[in-house]
Amino acid sequence: MAGGTPQTEALQAPPLSADEDAWNSRDTPPHPSPPEDLNPTDLLVGECSIQELAAQVQTLKTLVQAQQDILYSQKAQIDQLTETLHEERLRARHGAPPAIALPETLQPQQQQQRHALRPFDAQHIAFGDRRLMGLYDARFHSTHTGAIPADLRILPDRIVLVRHAESEGNVDNKAYTYIPDSQVPLTSRGHMQAREAGRRIKDMMEADPERAPDYKLFFYISPYKRSLQTYEGISSQFPSHHLLGVQEEVQLREQDFGNFQDQQGKQHEKAERLRFGRFFYRFPNGESGADVYDRITIFEDHMIRDINAGRFADNSALVLVTHGLALRIFLMRWFHWTVDEFLSVYNPANAEPLVLERCPDAEYTAWRHTKSLYRLTDESMRSLRGCTAEMCSTDHLPRKSLKVSTRLM
Image (cartoon, rainbow, N blue to C red):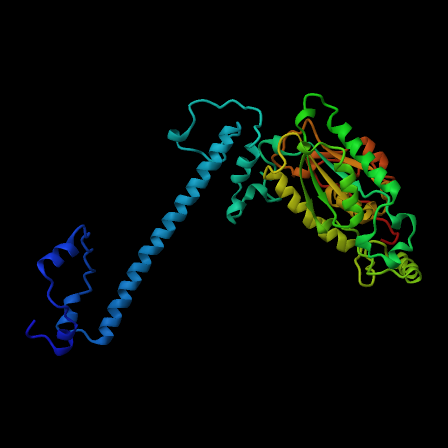
């Protein structure tokens, strides 16, 4: 370009040889045509100012960004459709009706027969959970009509609640003055109680000869020493192939009564609690019953999500090893007791298994919550002094009225 400016001549590359030109052009895809409002030749003849060049670069960036946005949007739609297709295949595999109206080309030619839940089906069901991708999944939201899984076989058969066995603190309250509450151990009698509780749970799980060979237990336990030792005693009665796993849950710990407990000071605080109200009184440096209620609520919500996602599918039971007050509040939250009803129920005996069993004839589950599919057994109800059948009803509808008490809470 003889007529070019010195600036454009300085930017020009030296001429390529024939070999170099052939190599650079080999298998090189053609460049897309530039937009009509861009004219690169203007840059070589000095007819474009810096401002115009910047404007054209910005226009090109905008076009590229718009194309990227379209691609991202299309990719998100593809991911969504792929996930929906995966879920519908799982539903068809287990005999459930489709959640969406599929095109005729996607409708199965014939209804697949329902089959027994196979060992890894629970994991397959869990992979269909949108929450694994960090997305909202209405099926597991407590206000959604589909809060209960379509296949009830993924729900555990039983949920067993066990208060820890007899501890040193149960025998002598002075133990709390020099041993941290979390480190109070079981007595020798407590160790025997824990093993006996394990034998009772084992007898219950093996009562059905057809299901006995392959049942599984999963434990949630309080981190306190007396709870850990109770778990060890219970689990020692089972072969290892029956133990699905164990998970320590800090939310299942005992009510915090406040650091080392001065015996005289604690008596004064308990007397003050009676005047203030037992459920709402917060111990200095400790918790109130309402505080325990809040953390037990969080635990139950997480546990129900794990249950609905199929973590404990097919002939399994959950065993929760916790403390007296935490156990009662667990039932309070489960059955929606009032504060007054909670206060009317006493702690169960040490190492006394309380069993929530799944209702065998659960029907019309579309509008029900998973909790309403479980009921407290009659034997367990008798072990809870003050508990009535009405309080442990599995009716999913709200109560028509509440009895209001004037006594202190």
